[in-house]
Image (cartoon, rainbow, N blue to C red; front, side, top):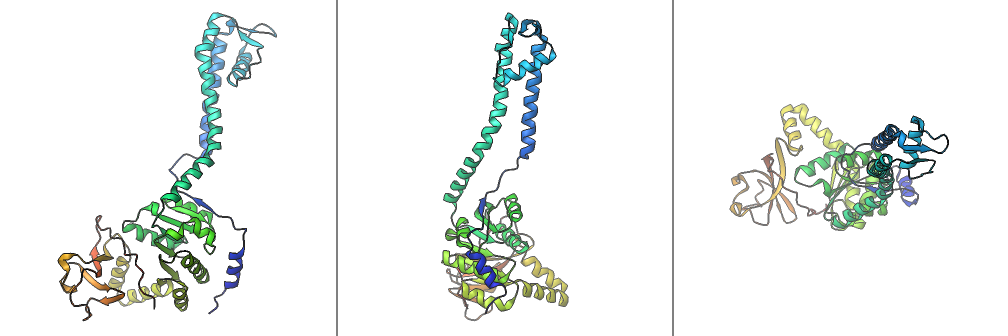
Length: 365
């Protein structure tokens, strides 16, 4: 099946003019203009204080032009002294003026230079510091989660996964929009600006070392290309894809997706359920909202549960995962639970409920 706009996306994937870069989350700091304004204000205060000190002791200075030092001469002397220009046309001649230069004006000069030179050095070293952070981040990133698309679906997926205990520094967002990546880094996630259909963009997200990949793009044809590229780069990761049209789900599974969520159909079924039973709709919405109310989780069977029937377990068991099969709680094939089984259960969400879902991909249809 040929998806609409697939040729255009393929041509775009072949282009080499797409710019992309990695952005790491930053600590909350003042706006750069505000920082520069503060430093300039301090420098101006230092200049005024120096000029005032010189003007108070003006009798200890001599001006080569007229011999006296007025207020303008004091500011002039302060400016050329603090900037280390030092023309020598105004000089301290008395002992008190020279002592003031040693113990007052010289420290002010050093402070003035630190303020101005420090601002310049900070600007020059910012790029080096950012490259160092980026290299350290790359070397430490392992078994992380890559999320392609930071729209409503992508943000909700990240919130759900993080509610199970995944750290924010283990999430990398890929999106072509700079504003979306800025929003992602503001939430504490690392971001890569670029087209995820390109392998070099996904490589910047270290997708070949990722444990799971969530694809939540705006278009189904884009999702297909991203899935193909991601599966080519990482054969072992669990790939979950959201699509709008149900007819595209088989194509996504053929492309390498382990699970395909049809957003339009899922929303429609929830709407229909809410019409038939608003209470049932509320319960279902609660189940898919991780971290509050009731949670649907996957966990291993513990020793105390081995040999028991799923109905005898303290938690409410919905399904049993045995090998490559997902069995209902009432399936006769389940029999007694085995230690190698995994359970899909409904539990009450508590701060201690942090069960990370199993990353093993289930068999594709």
